[in-house]
Image (cartoon, rainbow, N blue to C red; front, side, top):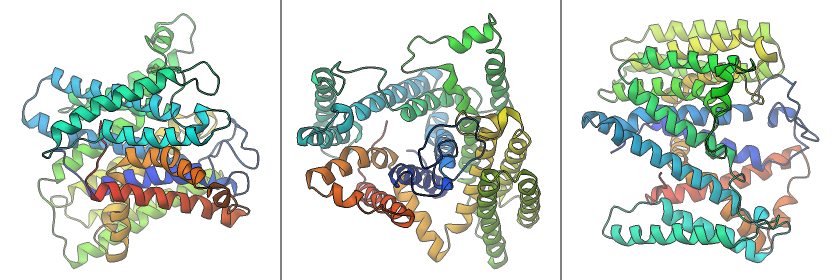
Length: 464
């Protein structure tokens, strides 16, 4: 059985809810830091020359990082069983193909993709697709296991029929090039991240060293006629794989290092004394502050001030981490070391490629966000056992255990229901100003979260 870690689930839950929130807040009327840095308000025109990141730009890398961290935990049973490569390759390939299907089906079944001007039938089809997804990705282990296996086959068959017969809004029918690119990237990262981790599970240095070769292909691909260019451009199926997607290994592979540490720490959990608890709280607070400071100052491009503030906060965190016994708190020591290295290296890379950017993504972006993800785990570690903050971590964790549900609930269930009940116009009327525009997204995200938690508490997990 896959081992679970509440901090990791919470990081994933935070990322998925922040993803929902960032796509549901009112556009055009909120401050620029409420949107992706490269698509500022009021017109949200893509400006690749704009450097900087906002909290929205942390969402995807945090999710990728949590995916990477989950790989060692998910495959720990295979390691104990001394499973062979082909067993792991089957798991990785199956997950990849299911995520590709998920990306294609969920995108095509959105009402506004089905038709230019969706009708009630389109919204009902979206709701039906949500139901089909339930049977496709929920695995029953009880007495109804056989019935659900049959239902799964029927659900996939019905999905194929829908994709085949629906004309969609351009009238040309189903297209492999119409897909959810976020899920396609996640599928690639799940596949390559899993295989790379399996081959390097006993040598983390080789795992990180692979990133040097990935970087070499990217940099060399700009030279016409080079083998780097040939490797970069080669793809047997451009709708499901491009070498370009492998750039996110710079986030996923550091995530697997976190997963290795979490797996090792699961063998023995320390029982902190009163003084240790105080230091852990301070480490958590400083770690969260470090994330906030970097987002704010990198967005405002106060680079020298950010470097100085980051160095001061890292020194303070190091001071308190050193007070914790390495033998008992090796996990926190490793998170700090890895996070500190990645963050400082990322800040050093900021001057390269025109500054840190999500789009087009830069090396500084991968490194900085990976480093901040380590500190997010440090922060969540210190928050999880406190009365108030522990409730927040538990809330995020409940969402993070069922990310596939959270990801599609808004588009395939909530929005269609709002339209079918006539409540959509009332909902959109909320966001007339900055505060109410944010409230619009918070309400939407809150309902998505409640539905996800409803599924989680009933153990209706969607898995690939």
